[in-house]
Structure formats: C-alpha cells, structure tokens
Image 1: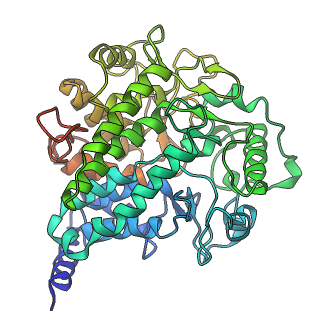
Image 2 (image 1 turned 45 degrees about the vertical axis):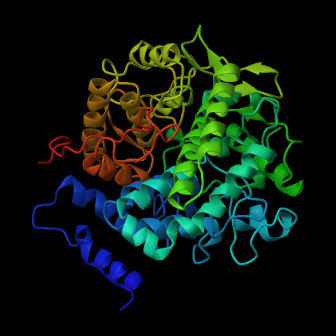
Image 3 (image 1 turned 180 degrees about the vertical axis):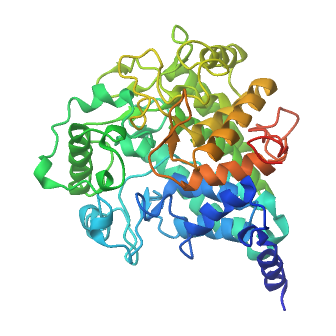
Length: 482
C-alpha cells in the first residue's frame, strides 16, 4: 500500500463521528447534520431548501469537516474548484444533475452556463450558475491542510488547488475592480451572500423587476414567506441575473455594482492564506502578503466611515456610500492589518446600541437594530447568522478582545444547539429561522468546539506580526455538552 493509500485509510478509520456513542453530544449532533447533507462528493447546505453545492457554504463546511475527516474536507473544496470557469471565476452554485429542475430556482436551465458562459470558459461537463460568492476558499484550503499536513502533502492537495485559487483571485482583482480603486465589486446581491440586506435597497431601486409570472420561487415551499425576500426583491434579482446571462457573463456593464466590505475583507484574508500556501509549496509569499496589505489600505480609504464607526458599502452606479449599518461592515475586524483606531471603533460599534453584542443580543444581528428596515426574522434584514458570528469572534481574538470573543463563542454554541443548527436565528431570542440542520452552522459548531488558539499558522507578513485570524478556544464545556 502506497503512502497516499495508507493515509487515506487512516483518515477513514478516524471517521468515528458518524458512528455515535450511546450518549449523543453536540459534536455528534453536528456531525450527523454534515453526514446527512453529504452527497458523496460535496455537502448541500440544506436537503430541502438548498439541494446543490454552494460556493462559500462549501468553504465554511470544509473548515468544520477537517475535524471529522480531512480527506472529506479536501474533497469538498476539490469538487467545487473542479467547476471553475476558464476566466477564473468560481460559480456560486454547482448543480447536482440528479436534482429535479423544479427543486430550486434559478435552476440550470435559467443560468445556461454551458452556452451563455461559453465565452467566459464555463465548464461543459457540469452545470453552474454564472455569478460568484465571497472568496473565503483559500483560507478554508489552508485550514484544511493544517488539519492533516501529512495527508495533504501525500495527496498533493495544495499543489492542485493553488493554481485554481490563484486564478480565482486574479479574476476578482482584474475583472471586478469596477471602481478603479483596487477593491472588488459585486454585480448581484447574491454574490455578496447577504442576499436581501437593506444595503441593496437603494442600488436595487434602479432595477426594473422581472414579471412575477416569469419565474416560480421554490424557496417559498420550504420557508415562511415572512422570513424570505419579498416578491419585488426577487423580481429584481431575477432581472439582474438574466441581464448578466444575456450579456454572456461579461463584467462591467450591469446596473448593479457595489464595493462591499465583507467580500473584500474575505479576499484579503484569503490572499494572506494563499501566501502561506505558496510558502508551503516552496515559493515566496511576500508579494501576496504585500498585496493583502495594499487591499487593506484601499478598504480603509474607500469604505471606512468614522462617523458610523464601521465600514459602509459603496454604490458605484449611485455614486457614493450606502448609509446603512450591516454586519458586512463589521466583518473586516478579522484583518489584523487594520489601523488600531479602526479596530477599536469596530469593537465599540459591535457593543453599542446598533448591534448590542454582549448586551441585548445573543449573536450579532445582520442589520442595525435601530434601523428602519430592521426585521428580526426576514433573512439578512436583522436575523443573526452563524458564519458571520464565526468570522467576528475570530476578529475579536485577532485584536485582543478575548473575553468578548469567548462570550460570542459560548453564545454561538448554545444557540446552534438549541436551534437545531438553524440557518439563522432571531438575534434577541435565538429562535430558529430558515432551514433546519444547516450545513455551515453544524460545521462551524465543530470548529468552535475543537479549534485551538493560534493553530492556523497564519501571520500577516510571515515574520513576527500578530497571528492572522487567530483560531478559537478548544474548550468543549460550553453549549450544553461536557
């Protein structure tokens, strides 16, 4: 048996999480969700509501899977990257051919990736969407490698994913700098991942919605209409996507172009991670670290608003900042290269009346508690999400706010458990909303249960600077299980 086969067999033997002991723990309950949502090559976010592979979901899921099976975590990312387009974009959905077309909308016959995306190099053997999602993949790949470096090296994991990740970053940096200031723009609200945030209300108001009779929303069959985007919002999403498709997925001409702080912060974090991957492969990562620092400076210059104490979106078609407080504007806290006064202001904003962390809310709400558009149950217009909580608690640790991070971690674990690993929750009560048994909620629960502080092996310049994205505490005596 060769070395790869030996390591693979060893990992398979370790997958005891799927053979639960008599007393089920939080670990086992989370592992069961991931096993139930596993398709054989990737993990769906939800068997009912989201029956395909989603881009940033799979990155977060891989981060959790590494604690159960590093091999499966590697496979998760490899499956996603195998659907990459020739121009470098990683599509936001990779469709499973066995799923009926009417199970999810927009379905493959809407996106028409193999025909409308031909000029951009869409794959011919798999159907995908034509838009993207936040670039957290290099960070996920590095964390997955660190979980079992021996297996990763034996399989050539990093050597195979590095060129694809580098091409992904090139696409974003060269094709999506629509504002000319060095930051990446999203061309559809779905790309940013926070689909119907109030940040999009003004930019979307210019978009004529597609007629309601021209599409059928499959999401309303699995979720309460009060929790989902409105028909008007959905009509505008469909119009933007159809126009992008009909333009053969060429970038730069659409009605919607927004520089978003969370999207760019995740690109910066992943650029740092890509530098570490390059070093692992024997190359120099200095240029990538330097690029990440330049992007951080551009982020502060273009999107920071001291009067709001947080980052704001910039509407490139409307000509200025979007004056809405969203959790997206807090996610850059995970970057250790932020100026000290910026990081301190973000912490104050987190703890203040607009987000209430450590006081009135259990988890960080997705939108301003005092905003006119706040709704504790409607998708990204107020509910708390587990992936943003995971990112923010890492940022708190990176900036020396360990006590606040510990409190957020404990609240995350308790709420994930009590909500049945819900897609999102009421930020005040923790009541579950959206899909149950949600993939990244279960995966990030595992990461918070089992991660060790400082175990990421990431630094912001590879020398003596603070650890980038310092990992979470390894205690398992919170969240209702011991």
